[in-house]
Length: 220
Image (cartoon, rainbow, N blue to C red; front, side, top):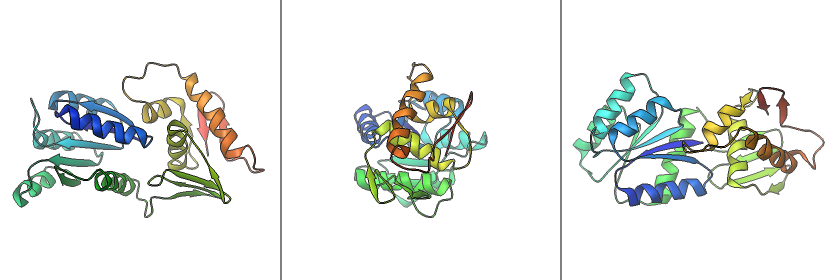
């Protein structure tokens, strides 16, 4: 999954980025409203974390602008303001949820996963295909009762494939969702990761789940 963090407090932004990168997310950051608007309108994200008080364009105006342009990405508003009026204002501008500083990262992480899950219309955070199970909250993968250890990138690729079950996922889609905005590598890096992922997911099992669609990408 890929998220955008628009937060001018660099220390907090770095903490959020570090936490979700360790969770297997690709994380882009912006430190003012203009930069955040540019990224939100030019890239595809699974969720946007948006601070209320931002330089150049504040969070309320930015949220309204994104919704006006038809961007439906879930938005989690982040701010030090905790009054009911401020919360209502944030939600009325188009935000999907609201959390105040200081916050517990565990709660913050749970809300992020809940918003992403809701946007994909999933009742449970656990993804299942045949005997393969992926739990994004516990960062755990099991196939036919056997625990499978994956690197963060392998986990993210598998999660993307499972969320698009039965659909072809292109190499470009994988790069855009698994690597951040600063990634400058070649698309063959995707093939390298899929090879190692396939060995772990399919290697010891008769039924092979991950298929290659030659010249296009992969499907599960």
